[in-house]
Amino acid sequence: MNTPKIFFFDSKPYDIEFFDRANKKPGYNIKYYEGRLNSDSVKLVKGFNTICIFVNDLVTKTMLKSLLENGVKLIALRSAGYNNIDLKAVYRNIHIVRVPAYSPHAVAEHAVALMLTLNRKIHKAYYRTHENNFTLNGLLGFDLYGKTAGVIGTGQIGKVVIDILNGFKMKVLAHDASPDNAYAKKNNFKYVSLKTLYRESDVITLHCPLNKSTYHLINDDSISMMKDGVMIINTGRGGIIDSKALIQGLKSNKIGYAGLDVYEEESDYFFEDFSNVVLEDDVLARLLTFNNVIITSHQAFFTKEALSKIAETTLSNIEDFFAGKILQNEICYKCGNKKCLRKLNGRCF
Ligand code: NAD
Image (cartoon, rainbow, N blue to C red; front, side, top):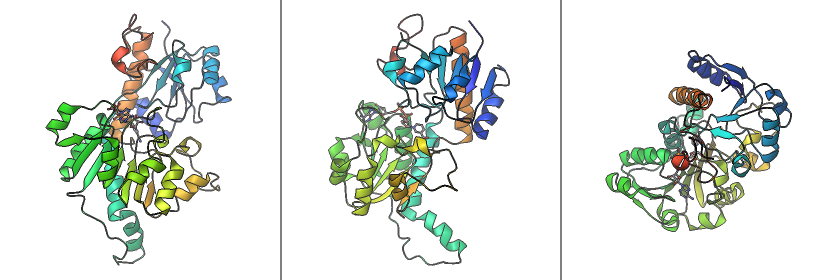
């Protein structure tokens, strides 16, 4: 097999720092490129057999055709989620590896940070005291102790969130397409229907992937079933929430707080500096006007531990591919997970 020649899209200084550190031993040829993968930049990959991409680099059918024409054999995702990939188009056409787990703690802790900040209004208090305003009016919060949290998606991240919320002595209700009943029994929470979760939860936090069944899971209908003043936290993917329905819910005070680390149209804005430009996205602009909404730009994963693991796993995925080894972290179109990875010579197709 060839040796890897890696074209690295969407590279930021922190990516370069952590990848250079992890690449000391294999010493692969990596070309860092700041821009996204798009119809112009795809031409730059000629001569590279591997591209390394992140959450907002889209691999569509047309993009895949260009990548193959340019000699790309492997797409290495630096993320766990892969909703940016047209799985139908890539199936049987190219190998794609991902980083299925880097630090569920990083994302779970950020979700809880959003909960605490919104509830105790730390974002407002920070500015107040800096202005020598030491009043408390408008900063009233509530005890999380004894309240009900609804966790949608109890995979790696959802489970860590449940652990933390159990520490607050919240009552935890959960919903998952494949419930882990043994884990629930041991960890003091109950699986319920979505309707029950919506009806009973004071805080709802989303930790499922974005797929056909979760697209706009939070919409006008589901919001109407929720408690008045509910808090919604989304560190999953933006498309799980219908942002327009969220705005209606916030305007009518049905939704009391929203903590969003992801946004459905984030690829146009997140990870870039638009501080000198007028925002053209009216939905994002409206969301930013609410004083009970906190938006962070897909930073839940952003810890030292997670960045180290992402770099190490990505390079080891690439190494395995070029060594012809079984790819533990390959994405498969049929089931989208690792259960079917070893169908033929270690490839899922
Ligand atoms: P995971 O695969 O371990 O868990 C996902 C869980 O969601 C699984 O238990 C699965 O059964 C469940 N699920 C699937 N479809 C569902 C549905 N329709 N309803 C309810 N549950 C459903 O994944 P994870 O590592 O816990 O990550 C969860 C998601 O978090 C990822 O898919 C990704 O989109 C997102 N994520 C965000 C960041 C960030 O920085 N904001 C970082 C990592 C992951």
